[in-house]
Image 1 (cartoon, rainbow, N blue to C red):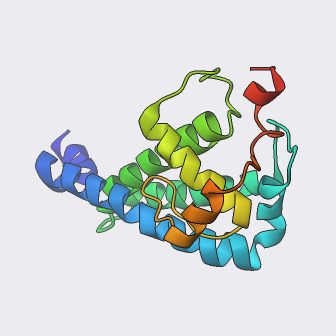
Image 2: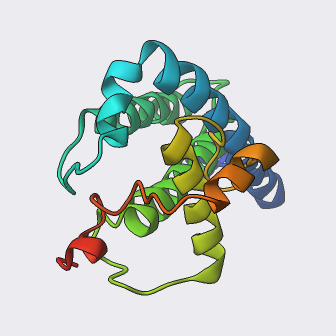
Length: 178
């Protein structure tokens, strides 16, 4: 029925895709800010499990963050599908969900090897993200973003002079279990 289609896609397909893209791109600064001021602020007790050396590939307290974030997105999608005037939440929810999937794949799958899918394969573009995240773990500081991390030059220089690998004990590849 046309009224159902108009509800799900209240704008043109091109506009829908633009909104999805904008939502996806807006998630990087939002994620960086949330990571900085929530996960390294009021929510540090949960997030500390992620920075603890030797944490397993299993469930961490930190994993409650994506559960909470996904719950918010699911509620927004429900509103978008079920409440008049809120259909714009649908493409926003799609963009946020795509960002969350990319984040999980890069962060949990590739960098921390928690999903067991990459084995010992290396991907140059993802290695650059892993290096930025390594610096975050080394100093518990910036960068807080994930897909477009901004690494302060002083931290990059300090990290280049250390052999310490904050992932060595966490990585199943390093442990020979991947």
